[in-house]
Length: 343
Image 1 (cartoon, rainbow, N blue to C red):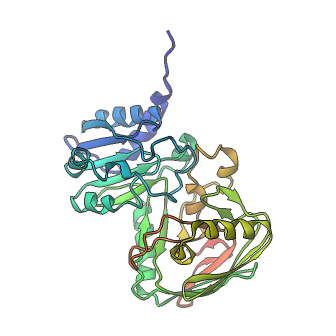
Image 2 (tube, helix red, strand yellow):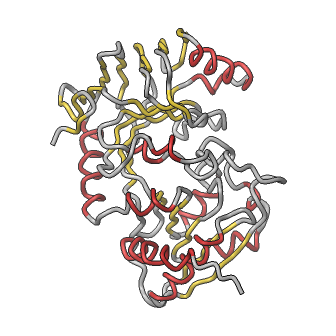
Image 3 (tube, one colour):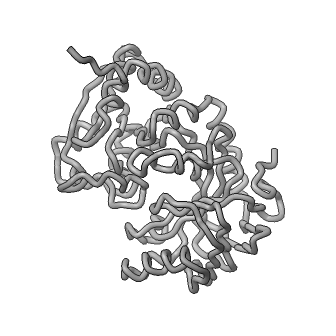
């Protein structure tokens, strides 16, 4: 008889993660999966939660798509929309203290997420490869570090990003709704992502120039920039794209989307995750890795395009573009210098 014991080793790190999430004996926790979710993650989650004496239920809901989409889980799709018209599943999630979301796309861009969180349920999304999870297992103090960075953004009026490659971007922080991810959920009504450690704001307007340098990352393509790309930003919108093959790829994506909202910038901020490996995307197939190392690497600049919940934009045509080597300041106060966090 052949035994699949992969979940046994994983259970150790899943238990440590759930301890960070302050899972208590008797809490109701749902392990949520879809048919194409990783079976070893489901088993490890179930076992770890049971060892913490939680009341655990494993639920499998229909997939987010009629067919498996193996490389789409990048936060750039519509999310798990199969639950939107499923009151039975919704009531289960509303009634839980915590949901461990092991689906491929999660709820990040679904209207249902807000309703689940408003019910007091906390949600943890898990989608990266085992080594990525283990290497980037957080610490309790990560939350305080992120909240300190949020306070800088709350007090600020303008975010300035420059780089030796030619970036000079200014973004207004007025009514910017700053937030953070710290890689765990330990309070009711909160969503987070394991692994992650970053701070972001949602500027309503920005202008200037963003120059992507070789080695920067294009998500959802899950590829590294090969030659410089210059984006001209006017009134918070990509007004012009110049460069070679990578620039043309971005242009074609936006042209094919045929969606004006896709051209606008959405959130932007910087990474805090000291254990991140910028090159992790090159070590895995596209199905195995969501790209959180690059998104959250300490000292990166991350900007996104498309959806903006505070301006009513809900497009799913969405880029996340992490950049290295930038200098970031808030009202003249440096938070990152040439890709290195300022302590």
